[in-house]
Length: 352
Image (cartoon, rainbow, N blue to C red):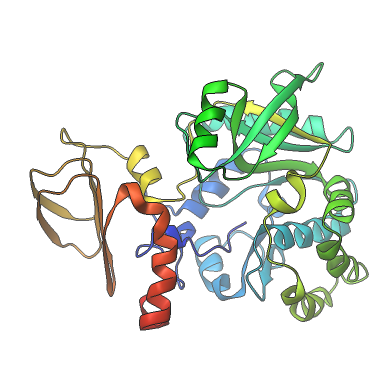
């Protein structure tokens, strides 16, 4: 899944080139390219399907020339993850009715890649046997309010590390997140899922019939030249809803594979700060030179070989890209998405 705009990473992440297409770590590879690199030892390129917004077709082909054009599904409108996954499942099922699907966001950092691929192997073995929905769960290290939380239930016999899900809570408030953390029974939902094509489409029909109805109407077109025309006409009618709200919180056949994979979803400046090297004052520098006086725990991320001179900042984001500069407290970064909406309303699309 690589169609999001990543507004919490503004102004680095912009409408015309969101975060999944950026090289955050100076490796020469974008987050999307790193995601594909990570799974290529396990899944051949011809089996990798990319779902993205139609406006990113050119960037995808530029960054991933080895992915054949027929494997790039172009959404004509932004409708969150549920319609994205439903379409992809129909497309894949038309190619292989017995297919097992690994569903991955394109903007995650995973440091323990061998562990990750082993977990995918074990997960695929688990979901191909029965009508099961499997998510990858990660032990929380803070009461983060931007993640979903999974309460683990009974272990599954013969599948170490896999448990039945007792409850699934999407983005709790801080008080509830603290309770979850202290209980030891909850894991972060990574947003990475495994299921068979049949199982996830069954779940759509049971728990999200509105989305299911829109895409079921095109069954005769998937895998044919008429698929794109059907999607262009019908996809915009799909409700904008996440897979977590549409399916995972409701389904009774959800399981979790607990994992240690060195994970960050890189969904925000805070996540970048936590995963980046820091100097002795706890500052992070990305793409610029910095002369900082009495600054602590601050991210300096400025494009274009510029010098940043700052004094007295503690716990701030200083980020500049193209025509926009952000100076904002890291502790309030959850508000940046609304800031972007306010910028759009007041100053227009040119700044977002």
